[in-house]
Length: 88
Image 1 (cartoon, rainbow, N blue to C red):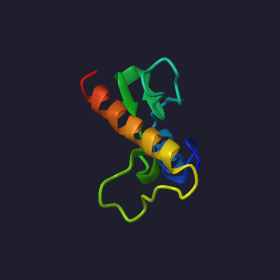
Image 2 (image 1 turned 135 degrees about the vertical axis):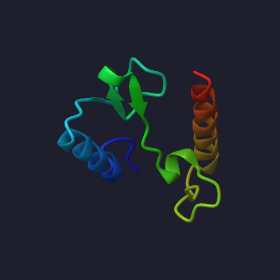
Image 3 (image 1 turned 90 degrees about the vertical axis):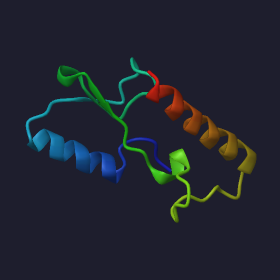
Image 4 (image 1 turned 60 degrees about the horizontal axis):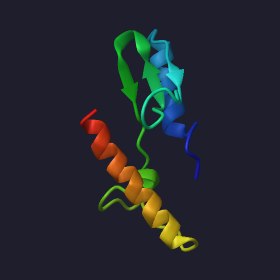
């Protein structure tokens, strides 16, 4: 389970670069460490994976069988973080 440089992120970055957008990746200066930062356009992009954000009714999201309590708390925290960032 990777947190960065996933296939969807790389695909999006290649597309943005091809279209002439320049960006930074995983910039710690912003809350949640966004996957892509387009500073020129005051825009941040999160590529939300089904696992890390526990999408409801998604066939790809399954809580691991080991350390279940840890992962349940971690994913719940990720969900709360998204709610806070919408207000940011």
